[in-house]
Image (cartoon, rainbow, N blue to C red; front, side, top):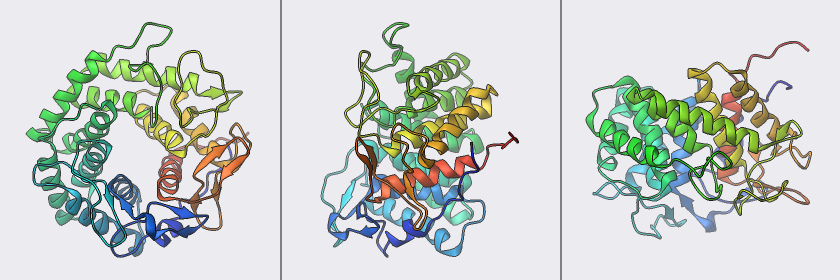
Length: 340
């Protein structure tokens, strides 16, 4: 691979006002009329905490994200997801992905926040959220990642452990449909790699080697399925089943970012070269090594394009795709580049 670009927060900052990060953009222009969403603000918190030496403007995003997540949380720990541009919530609290992603972000902040205030604020929110359970496999997986982050630094934290134990039991029941289709669902959907990543994280946190091994095996299967001619050819918006042909569009940056997340985690517990290869492929997907041969970001703004379509990139630079780019490039820093 070629050296990956440095994560550039310029476009993310341009999408952000004093309330939050706008969800959508028309090309690089924010579209305030579509408002904000908790899913994105949880992702904002994660990427800001991953920066080794954040600029002051990026550091301020940490506080902004924590405030947004606090406002999104109901007293029983569930989360609202959609806020309009006037700051009014448009939905009711749930345990959907916004709940799981918030716990992921809060666990990251509780474990790695750069101040005691950030760590305490995040822990208090997580403890309230951790009393809930979700029927959704992905919501549960996102939440498990946050609980595992906190347990890594506070092994005795009971709410996080209880949440992770419940997730582990759920994952143990998701055994797939035989060797030909080991995936725990009848079809691949979105952010697929979070399911094996959560198995890996949970297996490590709880000392459950079979669950860790299942996560590694499932991630390896997913990488094989989502690789074609040496590059990533990821699951499209409509999902994918056992008999589907590829390539299929429209492909989403969130799928690539989930692969990068999972491979980065797998590499920390299993030094098989396929994890660094998978991570490099995720970085290269944004750089143009994909089914269309198109660069999937704007180097002038730092924004990620919203999807890879049959005719080329969707050049709108929304929050989700920009955050997927930033997250993937952050992981790309760990790659050791060897001379050709």
